[in-house]
Image 1 (cartoon, rainbow, N blue to C red):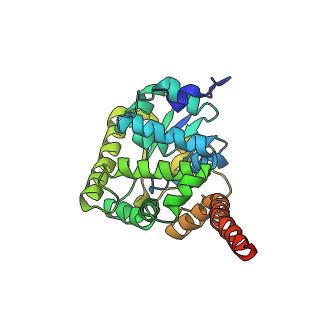
Image 2: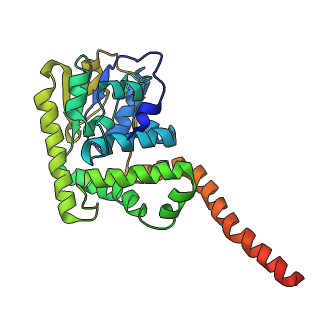
Image 3: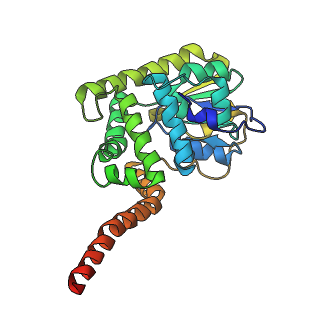
Length: 272
């Protein structure tokens, strides 16, 4: 079966990977993504994936399904190089490919942020879980069938839920327990596999900002404040900002599909 990644043209050049963030989602990754941009890096984060449109989202979905769900030949270095050719820093995506990223990009610097487990689960419950749940319900389950952007968005999030919660669903207690176990496993793998001199491990509860990352990255501390975190309300606002244009377009298509035939039927009735 032909994979999407195989249909894409080879990049003219591939940027060397300078920083790889191995952290799970909801552990300061969005603010770190913003901070790395401020420091001059070109980071790829879930935000870039979604804003990149259907192709980027379906690439992420394909990579997940190939590794975890028997969807085809797993991505290797060539595939990741093609996908991330224009980026020198990768955030969030590596949490699902810890061993691969450490092996493929040994010269990069690796950052792992950790969080108290109950706090992480609570953050997921307040942000990601409502998104995953909404994918199974109207209007998202309909929008995903009539708009290409929403198709990619819904398909990716259904796969993310399946992988993160080990096929049990985000509202299943055993699924949550398994997601916590995976979070511990990712941290352990990162600490075991990455070279100690190229790995920065930070805990959010101990403070995380310029003072922690700049010395490690050999960068001067900026005069600007460290970016604000992606709290639940900010998460919802950001999600709305990303999906609103496609949602409006899909909604108009639904209204047109329903109202035009209805109006035509009414016109025929009154003319007959």
